[in-house]
Length: 205
Image 1 (cartoon, rainbow, N blue to C red):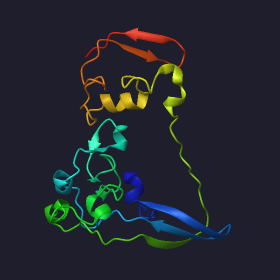
Image 2 (cartoon, one colour):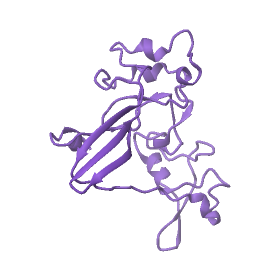
Image 3 (cartoon, one colour):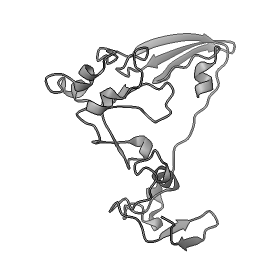
Image 4 (tube, one colour):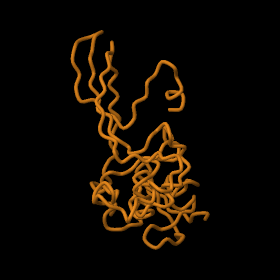
């Protein structure tokens, strides 16, 4: 992603979605809506001063941490985000949802570069392009559908992606494997592997 951002022939539009495509091969007109992040990308230096004072700090589920960690209403989507700029969660920000966040939004006062901009609106962008590459990505499988593993019955049944966040040094437990239910070290772990066999072993923790 860093190479994409720095490439002279690539324009990277984040927080954006295509709303209309007109024309034909070699001559498309694409309409794009770029959603506001309520942070001026040119001014933000990702210093984190705004996130440190957010009234909802560590109170909202962090999607990148598979909801095992917490974040505030202003946050970095993930540690290596491109561009490395903060964004405000419009669905939870007290100022955006209620029109008031104390006497004054603390993030607004904490940002010395005045990057917080609650007046931002969705922006319509049009681009003329010759070809379109469709890259849809994918959705993760809902583990709740595999009822035989008891994912919904026990907080200690986790997916491999949730395990990856637990063992990551930048994850919610800073790399220490802890039981989600008690935050204690587990005495044993059972892994379900692709071969269909269950492997039980004592972890080296």
